[in-house]
Length: 100
Image 1 (cartoon, rainbow, N blue to C red):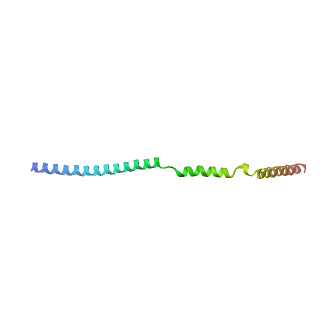
Image 2: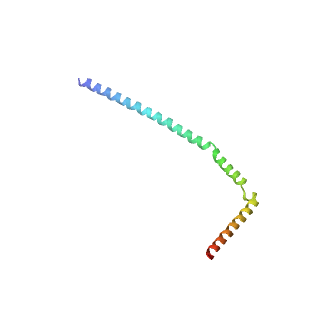
Image 3: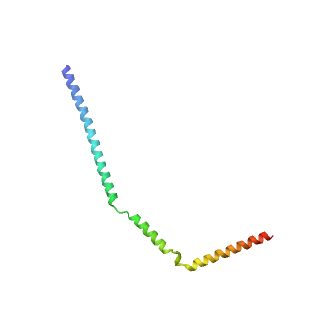
């Protein structure tokens, strides 16, 4: 009976190794597919142009070109005059308060 027990133990050990080997192969295949997918995504991102970056730069350039300070010189003069008048009013108000 000892030979029979040894044979059964060897068969059981062989089946356990087959099961471990199968699990190992499945995990290796999943890992390989994930690695290939990651590399493909990295290559795609590297070679695909970034359209949003170009859009932002063009938008900023257009926006700044549209609102140049030199486009409306009369507004600059008017705002300066208005600021001077307000400053004069404040000075007069302070002088009147100090006289009282």
